[in-house]
Length: 156
Length: 271
Image (tube, rainbow over all chains, first blue to last red; front, side, top):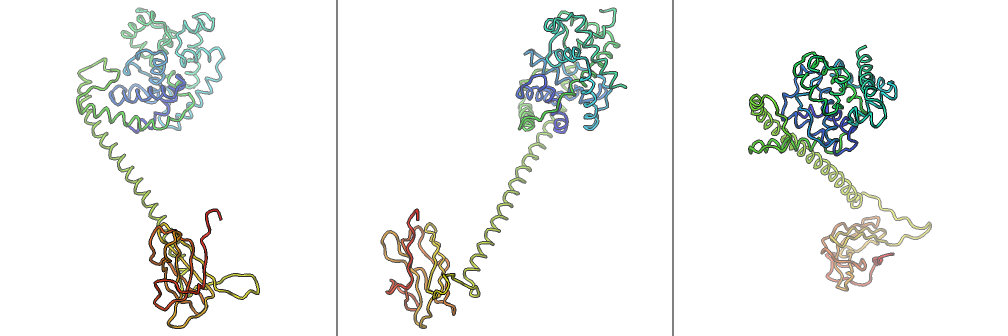
């Protein structure tokens, strides 16, 4: 368990901190995730994809829950993912993350903003539309387009 | 929604939890029935994982790992006592299987806790051992240096040279270093006159409290007129006002005999 913690705690903490912007709360989220893995080790099964990717999504979702001060919206078993990225080792992960950052920075500003608000600030598409003044359909399209661009770039 | 697949835009919003609550029920219902949409959702989650992992890496707060280990230990202890941990339950499905897994996991937790405990203990002991070895090495070095100082001061072959103004006839001199707290005294004299066989010099400590002088050792100079008295037996905690050297019979005297050959007053504080 400590190996798992040593390998992924930094990444999980960084994701939570990015969302919460509060080291104490971010550590709480990180601890809770690893604690749940400890209590429920079969929540993640290898067939579901990369453990690191799964933990990253869990970190983001739990941090958003914490931000909204609500109970967890999904069980750890509910998050299933397929990752096309090869991120088994730290070197591969770092290389991949550099690529992802480059793709995200290259997105049109309005797409970047929509992803930022939805993914890291936890706003619903209605809240984003209200904040930006854009139509709901436009907000949806921007978020989807951003993810599709990322998927194509990584898969290329 | 139940008959049509979930549009990709909605799938992305659902995965991001960015969908309004009134839309969620229909999406969940469809996902429960549609493997194709579940697969599509997994792919979106994979994309979102990349976005999540792209955040700038930050260092863990100090002690975070230790706090986690302690939490595991506390949880294992609670489990041993049969007390449920105050955590949000995540066992929402397959309760029977979870219970079986939990029993096996408890055994693993106990083993892991024991291993943690041992690891911590070994680390603490190793740290203590390293500190003690370092302290011993420092002490040994200090002892060696102190011994070297003593050897230089007391060796009969050491050359004792007093530097004075040029063309000045050497006069007898003495230098006393005294530490009242532990009664330590090191005295060295130069250019002393040779004495008859039945005579010797005697060093005296003159107490600051006005009590009688305390004999601090009988000595005879070498051929060059040099002599040392190192750590004579003296009572502790007697502040000195002055030191003196007299000529006494070879075995020493109970009280100093005039004349005083060498005399030096202890500088008062601030001098």
